[in-house]
Image (cartoon, rainbow, N blue to C red; front, side, top):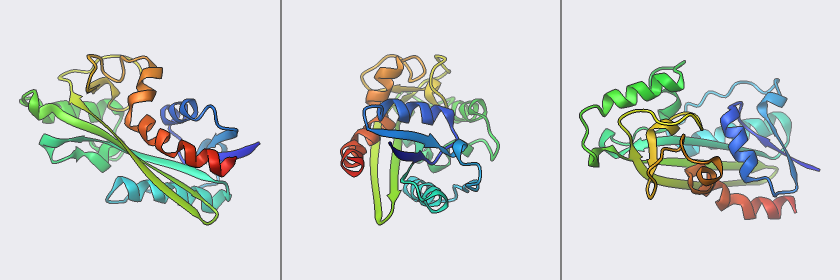
Length: 197
């Protein structure tokens, strides 16, 4: 069976991506299966730069077709922050809780309209002689307190448009269908199907 390497060690991302790509005739692995691949410094100025850097590095070290994503929560009122620094918003070794607390603090006096935000995901696929980049966006708003136990990252704070629940409260199947990552993966699924076909 053909192999696809996910350029991540994040179990939440691995679970979501694997669930969404479940129908493809491939075996999906992650960087946890390849400990010799060096840690990748996500120092790009954009999500696209980081996604490409991760996919290229994984491919260079394993020669396996590699898929990487970089995602960010962009709050319009905060000049699209945390954005590309979403994972490190509260500092280099910040936990999800640290990042969520900092975001809630930044929005403590915000109006409903100022809580408008979007999750954005850029996915990069790199293989021999091939590079493909797609993007997915999910609009919504930031709550005033965490809700739900599912998902990861900012999921307890983000309510997608058309729903009353946060990503952390939604059924994973629904979240995967409407999320920024789900939209981006749907956008690259046909390409992957053809590539691995």
